[in-house]
Image 1: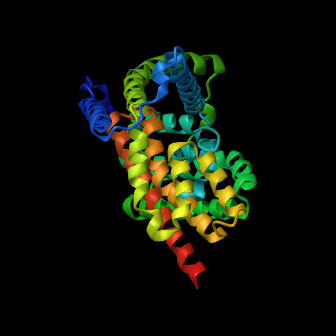
Image 2: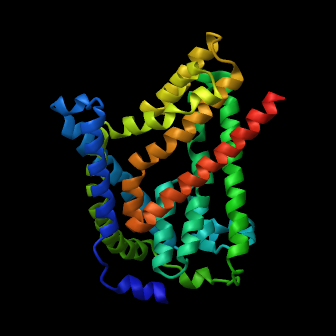
Length: 358
């Protein structure tokens, strides 16, 4: 009730968003001025605006639109109960409602649709803010499996056995994270009373469902893009100023020399500066040359994961999360998600180091 009333009030300007963007831009300018990073050559490219701004924004808008519309169609058509039934035992053990189960199941197909469903359920009073946060964090498990096929067929040829071990360890970390979240949910949320819904009584024709969904979709998409576009503009500018490259190198600097040989630095650096594929290619080359053992390669890949993924999330996910959710909640979800991910990978990595040292 309270959530619904609050949603109807005129929403204040997203001052937190403006503050974060301003601080980030100022920090990037200071780093560029005092740290002398290499500025991206993209600024000199005539097609810069199309390649780095317009095209990515169009792609992001398309993906958000598809996911948002699909999520609202699922909710409006009454499929929530059917989707949630697949994982209902797990959700019920964690004292989470059917809306959480529907979002969790949808995340195996589309992360955007799953997150959009959470926003819809929260605005309709079906999920509390705490349930939204817990479900969004739990959606990290289906997100892992969603990208697993592509990741597997890239990593295995490049890094071989070390790459396979890395995948197994990150999967264990993801399962550990999920188990911890569900357990926390069970002890922090009150049990939900199971309500039987007569879906036949609620059934609507597809024409009615689409008409009702379309207006809500346009309104929400407009609100989302008004947040996404300025965030993306600032993140793109900060990236071109070399801030993220500087940050990644600073984070990686003190890790490799104390845990793995100096030669492994290239694996971490390539994981940071370029896409993750470059890190695995470097790992495979060092492994084949006999410079690194399988154990050292796995540790280097885990270090690259710990350091690179949070920075990559800040760069790529911040506009998306601030658009789908409110800026304050979006920042909170990214912070919690990346913190838990790093902690779980460190725990699993430490266990691997200790077990293989015996």
